[in-house]
Image (cartoon, rainbow, N blue to C red; front, side, top):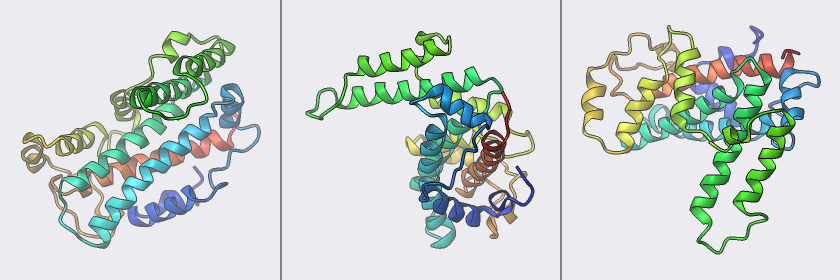
Length: 255
């Protein structure tokens, strides 16, 4: 991403506020004609890759903005709820990074379609016994995804697998710079707090975050990840990495 891009150099809370504005502005995630992401959108039409990215990032920012308001702005006790919110941010950002990350277009298209397949399966599981109007059955919607997959010579069975957040988290962990806070450990801790696991507070108390960057928050941070700023900072680092990658894919003509 260009060095003067404001969303890369802004410290954590400022970055989150800027992203809230971007997510609420219709055209603030531009995709330039002829760019790699533009070609992805054409290939995955009508299931545009850029739309999946925007939905995932918007959900992540909603979660992280809530953490910022509770912990940074209002300085409320950092209980289980804030860990749960940070987890939502990490999962959605990892998903966006997982979709956008591969160098090969076919991999990006397949992951876009798998995201949609998971959405179809989740919605069917949650609503098929309810009196909820639907334009098409789950099988019909999956068949539409099959058609897009075949158009790209992709295997429909792979698309119908959907995806799990664990896969996205592992991908982000593997491809982010090793000097950062990582993704898997803060995500695991956040999940532990979310599910009320007794190991989570004990585990958080003994893990160090020597690679945390206090200047990202502009406020003091604890040296132990029991402070919810640990997963929040990890999510901010993942967001920065995604924004850099998005800038390349949305503005540069690559594969």
